[in-house]
Image 1 (cartoon, one colour):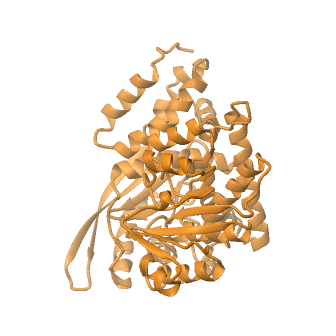
Image 2: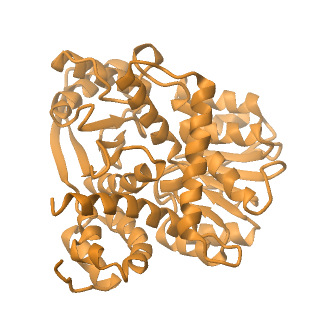
Length: 451
């Protein structure tokens, strides 16, 4: 085997920055992983010689395409679409499609990179990918969204397949959008196959997929607390976001005896000192899903709550925090505030919601801190189970899927313990998740040779 020249972390990251100019989110994601991986591979020559980390940090391909559609007034509109296929060493590319104005190539590359490790942690045979568009579904009619989805799939269909790349939903892409895209895929290819997940139950979808990411983040949190002999009963929690992940995380915390104090959206956050019970959570679900309303209207329905415009909830004292909105929503100063106010556990429901400064703050404080690639893997885990159900032409019962989700999250937790135990009762879950995910993908890549 050829002997490589070992580079140090700063040199490696300088190369990543040069190869990916003006892509800060992607560089941040690589840095967060590389900080732990470099120590792990220091004495493992085969990973150096085969340039494994560099290869994982270089997507297999990035497909960019034009999406043309007509609005309801007959105006021609033009957006940009992407599919980033990062790594398929352990299975078909798997990862969501995001429709949001903030979508860029950098954002999708970071998400696909993270997805590679997240999918490896589930134990299911799935590679990492991500896609999306800078299309904003907010304010669009249903027919405009349908026309956009059909146009998007007219290009995307040639790059995906049940054994190639299986997209799912993400921000801005729910069951409705998946339905429009699947309908167009079926129309073009004349194939009814498991090429998308997050489908309706009537046509190949899986039970509990909607709940899985939020529930999984709480199951992981419960596993972390158990290492300290604790549970969720009586614990206060602040949650950001008010969409699918946030509301189901809140629901599961309440079911397990905790008290949820906050939810948020892009306009600000609500603080309910009485706690959100199931009735209030159901109100938020209906308000956000069916009425497309704003979280600030919560205080009209529940007057004891207060709305804080333009702010995030991290200043509210709590025992637990779950960032479930979007990337880089929890900054270093927010992390310091949480620690100062007594926060003892953080479970990320979103992808990379904590910036690098915040990650370092949580790790230095040695609190229970779960990175998204571990704690929010429940969604893609159930997507993987949906793929299995589609392949077998069957469906599992809800209680079976709930148990599988719990088992998968417990398995991810055990993988993090295996590589993250720092002694003295401290588990570095970030390090554990990064190394466990990397090792599975890296060893598969070594087996395939230089490809």
